[in-house]
Each structure stands twice: as C-alpha cells, then as structure tokens.
Image 1 (cartoon, rainbow, N blue to C red):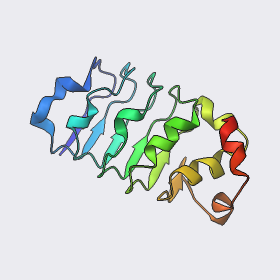
Image 2: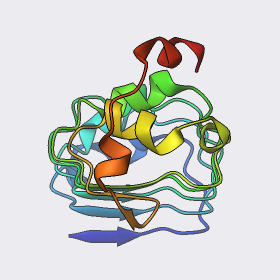
Image 3: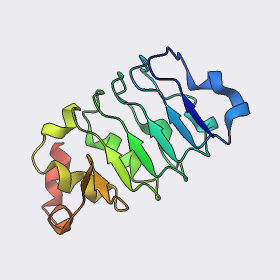
Image 4: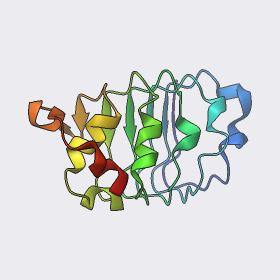
Length: 143
C-alpha cells in the first residue's frame, strides 16, 4: 500500500488511526508537518518521504523496525541526537538529510554513518569506506 499526500495539511499522524497500519509507503512532502507524534501507529512503513516540512524531532521514529528508506530533506534537523534515534531503525538503508542544519557539521557523513550502522546510501550517495572511517568519538559530544 502506498499513500501520497504531498502538499496537504496533516496536524497529527494519529489522524491515520489503525486503519492504515499496513501502509508501506507514505509521501507527505511539503505538507507543513511539524511533529511526528503518533507515527507509531504506522509500524509497517518501509518508505517515508517527509521532505520540505518543519520537523525537528525524530524520536517518534525510534524502533520503527521496518523502515528502509527515509527522506527528510529540507527540515529542521540540527541535533545529532536525532540521528542517533534513527540508529534504532535497524533496517534503514537509505537516508536523505540534505538541506538540514545538521549537514553543516564537520565530518557530517562519518557522524551519521557512525550512528546508523545499516546505512548504504546517504543523501543519494553510496556510503563508502571513507564514511565508515573511525574518528574521535569526543567529537560527537560537540554536535
């Protein structure tokens, strides 16, 4: 099942209720989404497209076991702790974060790949050995 609601207005993911719990792909780009509260009812999601919204907090996505692809381009993700939440999505292979404040930090790709070990693609560029190089973990405390 796929649902495309780009350029709509959704005040809460709770509006979906349990009737869409088997939804696999959700597109809500440019939809004035501020909060992911209630997204837990959509545990079957494999792909989630939330680009061009106003999201800062990714905590509600923690432990979303089926999420494989997540596009959160052009939002307000500025804290590496939010990326750490995505590290609990163990099947996450593709992540688009570009045009978020977090992208300006030094060693951005290495830091994201450190937190999300399962990633194969970041910002539509394949994760390579350079992205997996170890770095001073004290650096993460500064993000």
